[in-house]
Image (cartoon, rainbow over all chains, first blue to last red; front, side, top):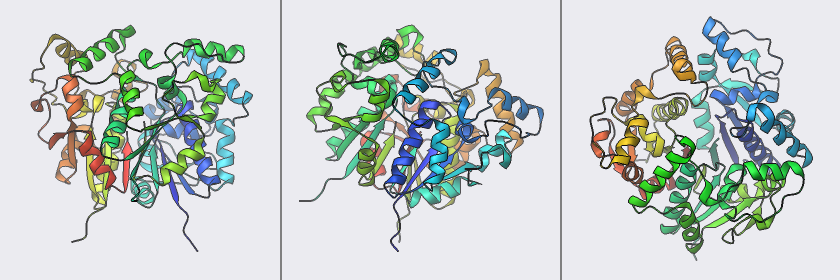
Length: 160
Length: 160
Length: 160
């Protein structure tokens, strides 16, 4: 069996605009029969956190971080022109208007298309995120060595 | 005929500093006989919009977006230390002082050197940008599949 | 002798979070026997500036820039939630708590592991940074052509 071409994406940013770009590329890669891995790290972990919350971080500083940096696919904001949410709301309207999926829908579609979504172990450790902080679509946690192992076998690797 | 090595750059950011980095690398690649493609998406589209304006977006929200996110190579600002334009002005002076081209000049030089500048169809759709919103140097519009097609044949692909 | 696989990282950002990601990947690559080059440009130069200052930039604008954009591994701040330093301080505590090295320590470790740290000549010219603005761990200055020469031989190239 011929091996599929690999596309690996580090999703470092938790901004709505960059999240959309990452999923757009991931989905396009999957639809072109590429083997796609998304490696979520740092602020990017916000994208794949459960929207409902409900997990527990240990220690007062990590609990505080969880409050100011709550995350969840529905809470992402634009990197520019957020305007206390008005700009982000507008962008979401424009997306609906052109039938572009929301981040929420992109995550579900990505899972269905076989895109592997991985949470960075190290960032999770620093930020105090347990495995149950993440949505069911997330496959597993893994470290930077796993990412580089994927990247070295990939035709294309992007840092978003 | 031997095929040229390819360099593909996604220009997602519309910040002056990142635009400069993108063109610097694109021009260097072209001068090293690489086949360079720049794929402008999201805020990056601002870089290649006509400075003069004059195109029309449909619908009130897209018209509003066109006002707050006007774009054009001469209106880009620094991602940091913009200081209501003072920092950006200063950076432009420092660039002139070291004979570094402006973004305006970089676009013209890139065209002359055969760099392919492409506008992302999907972002144009969401933001309501018609083909005539872009400068003459822009070759065409294309989607994420085109980009990944280029990327998979490229030695180096960068997301800026 | 078999040639080592190469990993090349452009460090464009001078944010603490992105600097950490860059070093984390560089160190992991080095520990996997990859030949790692970090190419620091624009704001990324802040990471490798001497913490003590003491160099001289020519001209009043470059001196001013050196004041507002002082740099040094110990002065980096988060791209988000800096909160006048409180957020950055908190992140550093969380890092210590999980035994994650500081940027300062990462630079020293990277040097010991043979990671090549290069400062971008062009950015140094624009910003007025002489060679003695940088720490001893920095190997040399080089331009975009050097970077692309490394990138075209690399398995993986990232723009951070």
